[in-house]
Length: 548
Image (cartoon, rainbow, N blue to C red):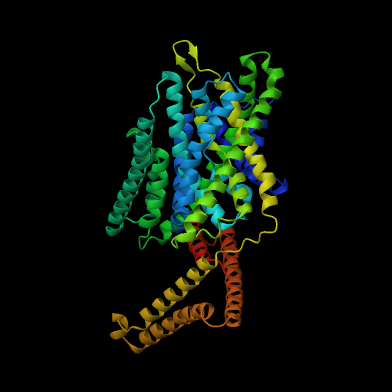
């Protein structure tokens, strides 16, 4: 029961943290980390032993799957060069330079262990930076940060595992490490794509036979990232990239017709899941902080007095990480500028040749859950009765880097974004308008064709009149749509205003229907099942109104 109580407490705190973040001028991740740390302080004493493998399995697959599903694939391909250079090149560059620096300022940490620490603090967390930036980052910068965070987890953790193995066995082979990295990355992508494709085929087979219950399909979708992750890990490839690839593939195969109710339910379930899991991740990070400090201090009684020096070491390490990231992003910008000067394919105009963009990419590289889970997976012993050297110090440094990256992004990003008016991508806006126009024309043409057997052979004149009236009403709505996306700006503005007024009137009418429905139920004039059925239809009608 204690575990159940703990889960309920954490879920309640996730909801409370959102309310607190509306009052305090702090990003939600920092609020949740602070609440978790206060809850774990000795006076309250809520301690959660975090199993790194269970943490990676429970939280990362669904979140990475969802990110891969929703991230714009075209933008990832458009910015594939900077994403690859940051996700792979920057990780290796950081491991080498930061590893030597960590060994230099902390000689007690052996060089292979320093490389492992540098590897585990390299991956970034797009969830945290999205919460901090609050959708104010320029679209190219945000896409590069998202693509980097989706892919550098694998490169960082693979490098980390090799460094840990080398520190324990004393054996390291660069060709073997490079070949293993390629196998792990490509294998993970293939497993995720295969699982997602098979799931799409299976769901299509179910729909063809009329098995289109939304709840069943959503349950299968929830299990997909976990299945892709587990099978990939069992095969010795990257489970993280497998979950990402499954999400990306699912966004292409999940276009089944007659699945409107399934998609509505799926969006609601995944929105709730993302909110709860993201909050739990940062709460669990905060819950670990007091234990991390206490464990470091108990290694040696003198550590309490040396704790400020350790904090200073963390500050130096974080400063070096920022410097390395800034140097690499500037070099990437110069390289891509040179390539773009003689090659017309690829457009990085919104990303390169801007000093501020490099700074945004530098401070936007926030560390998060993967770093904490990775460093907590460091083994306790290297041999029978021999403790892993400086394990608690490694965990302390990693937690400090996570906090400093969150705090620095909170302070610096708003300053860098000052004066930037982030407007929606005009190309995306034009494509949305064109899609609405084309779909409206297709709907009108389908109704203009006299191919309905009911229309060709009406049973009586009254039925024909009803059909014509219904068709007229439906076609008038689609012609109103065309008025919005055709014509001059003034005509579009007028049509848009009419749509806003009409939508407001429809919502008020639906609200009145709900109130009357509640009154009928309160007066015992209708049964519970009638209330639920009519209320569900009213909710679906309001959802179909969409945004004005």
